[in-house]
Image (tube, rainbow, N blue to C red; front, side, top):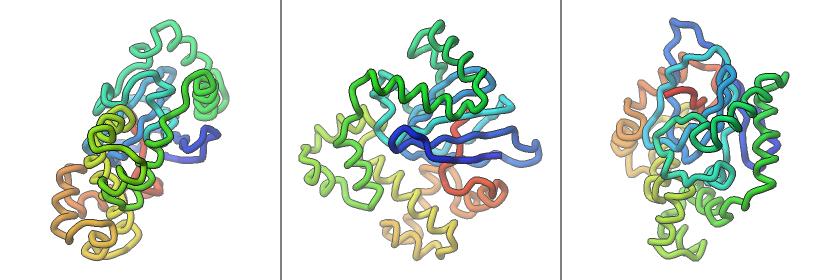
Length: 246
């Protein structure tokens, strides 16, 4: 029901979803600093960056989406990520109703809506300023477990500059992004069979209790509840998932 593949747009991922059986609970989508452009049964919407896990309330039979690399979407969409934090909005609100409707019709008519989204975004990206290259470096360093202070020094930004540019690129400051990426590392290890205590330390948490607190704070559930939800939706290969409707 959920599939991912590489996009031609640098760093992006294409995903598709078909309606799940009613008896199967939706899988929570962990925050990740990313934004998505989504086609849902003929309509286009944008999923902003989340600060907590999002539980899809699916209302369409088919979805296709393009998940931008962290920090890349604002340049293409024309809006700072902080303005879309924890929001799902119609593309009409960003590009106008007539343009959004025209694009939605084109994607709906395509044999592969996900690839059509990819082509649309690449055309738009060619006519806009490129994403902030420093923010790619920031996301990569934080994803690798580097501290915020080390990251700021490495990219040559002061603390205030880094915070301001992170809000525009990711929707939240670097400390929040670091917490989110650390949680994703830890839960990916747990899903791979690493014991929770070991996964916590390897991911950068102080201990297992720290991981438990962060999972409740950012995912809204226990580690055990999260892994159980993944088992119930085992076709999804990693802790990403789709950002469908609010």
